Image 1 (cartoon, rainbow, N blue to C red):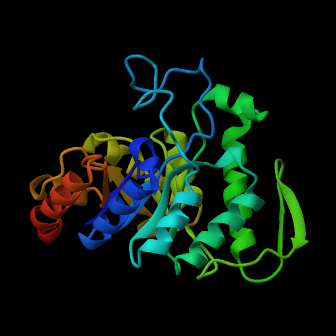
Image 2: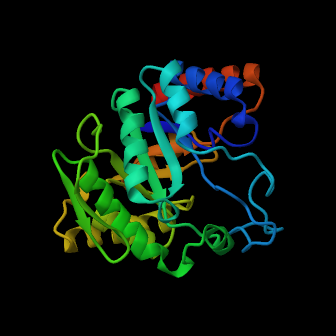
Length: 285
């Protein structure tokens, strides 16, 4: 089992000193990956955040949320092995040519450590602020995944879809392995089907093992329909209370990575908590 830390760029971790401490300590303690989140803006009046009592996002609507990719480039410079992931980047809000270039650059800077976690978004008002049709976001997400893979592959790139069309053109640098793993986020059947058709991984925001199993089964079924090997799709989940005893149930349904929140916003407490996590969980997983 691998372990990651999410929300690594938001709130208190928008401070580069604290984020740097989290990243270097996590790497030293055996954490496999660091995951950043995204909202480019948060309209004052917006669709209620799913599961929130007051409709606001975790930490409040005015929480600092830096760009998800730039902080990972900062972390790349101060670490050596920890993987650098977005969890998630709202893909249909960005043109795939720019996104492919930025992610490829991060991958090269980090020596091949980038993971692109993507989602189609849920906040209609954020799309409206950007002048993007919220109702086309699913189709745009699917096309953008395919377009980025075309841009990352060796040689001249071309793509033609309903929402994006380009080429032939040169796009360099290429990622270290001419590809970056794309993990599809979300907990809807549509997200699960997208992961099965196009993803290297699936990262649902669901904690219940039975619900996770249903979504994973849908991913595998969709992969088979698309002529893909479902065993090559990696499953990640969020964890609140992580202990060796409850990891077995997750492993049994196919989870290979559990992502947790930062244990604290205090540097000393972060160090103590992650060292304890290494000793009590990672060493026994």
